[in-house]
Length: 259
Image: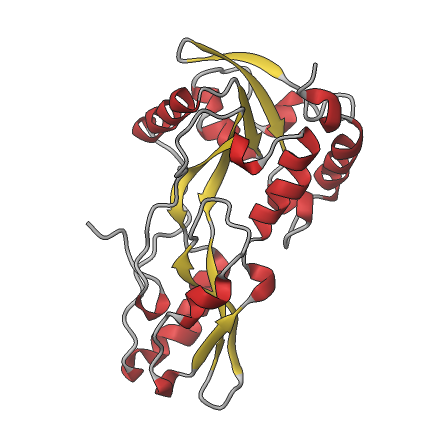
């Protein structure tokens, strides 16, 4: 059954960990991003700076191959053309490597990556772009858009069990939680001590430390850190969390998993 479709018709798909071999760490994010394109009208003028047009080819994608993906999307000549929106493709994946896994000494191939919601969600900016620029041009032969909004609830019991099963398969004993949502919608349902990142502390001496927990009878160590958006300054972000993470990256992370 189809999950939905992007502007210009690419199908929405689940983006999940493909390498199912045992891993050193398990990383839980919020929801999958997308391939973004700059939409130019027939006159060459920009209609949308960065429009989501396809699912990421891999979870926490770093932007590689964006040009090939965008070039494969058919656009009626009367609707203009698409070119890659370079800075909008893969920033969270690049931040994951540079600001989280790299400082911890963990290679991408040694991490199992997962999201609460395993597909793209239509955020407010994308929803506005679709409504104001795409929908009025449906008469040009463009297919309708059917993408889910960002949910008010990021996981139910069924999804939490799916995530736990991925954790079990991964064999990882260290669980990296990216920001508030994985703590609220996953961890707190197994361990009620924490519901937000701030519950672990907001000082340099507290941020990004390992905490022991039991997840469905499985002993793990929890590593709560800020979301890549905060850490890399991707749009709106908290200078406080960004500064705490910068200090952690330089002074704590390199020795953390060796202890």
